Image (tube, rainbow, N blue to C red; front, side, top):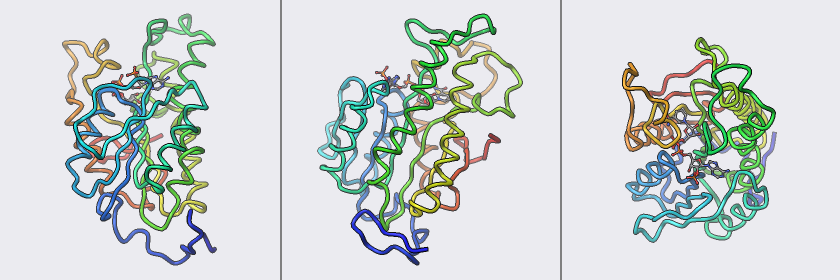
Length: 264
Ligand SMILES: NC(=O)c1ccc[n+]([C@@H]2O[C@H](COP(=O)([O-])OP(=O)(O)OC[C@H]3O[C@@H](n4cnc5c(N)ncnc54)[C@H](OP(=O)(O)O)[C@@H]3O)[C@@H](O)[C@H]2O)c1
């Protein structure tokens, strides 16, 4: 099957596995979400001398590293126009993208807490959680897909959570977050199947960042928590190392921060 990239170049027969996106001579990256892990991923990326442009997208501009390669663009997961506008800004800045990492997520808010039992579940909490934790991924793929499709290797990685694994669910609870992350995972897997034909240069993966100390998780990490708690910087280092090993053959998989696959 013949494919064409964003510039109309015939990419049929090109070996897009030859190198990973992070080894390209010039990398353009977008980090969606400027929370704890998003910010740490940006800092990790800045250590890569091949980085040409890094754009961080968020609801509000927070202090940026003093580095001319970094830009901020407004994006609100609940405002579709802001997603398409951000993609236009990124296209004008970089043309093509090699890495897009979605780090936006919501476990609790001023009006919403993770549910302990069925009676806590409301339609509103489900819809809100789905829009941020799942729906955004589809909107990002629609808006940024044309920028990722070209003859060089590229990665679309979206942060999920182990608790979104249906098979792994032994504890119960957290209905909205679990269900939204499971929906996120299905969207990602389905996208990876479509892009296997239309975006053959792109590795599409779901990543579990580990249990990471952040505004999202800290209220729920008890002092007796038995597993390892990562700093955002540690998690970002592991995730970037994993991303640097990916090829399109890995598309459609769910990895944890150690590079182990997680069952859906
Ligand atoms: N921390 C963990 O232990 C852990 C474990 C498993 C999975 N994860 C996943 O990892 C990802 C990053 O989480 P984190 O730990 O870095 O948490 P975080 O610091 O709270 O970051 C979450 C980010 O999502 C953003 N966000 C929420 N609603 C948004 C909206 N409507 N539009 C745009 N941005 C929005 C937040 O924006 P504001 O800064 O403006 O609030 C924040 O920047 C999430 O997807 C989370 O589910 C985390």
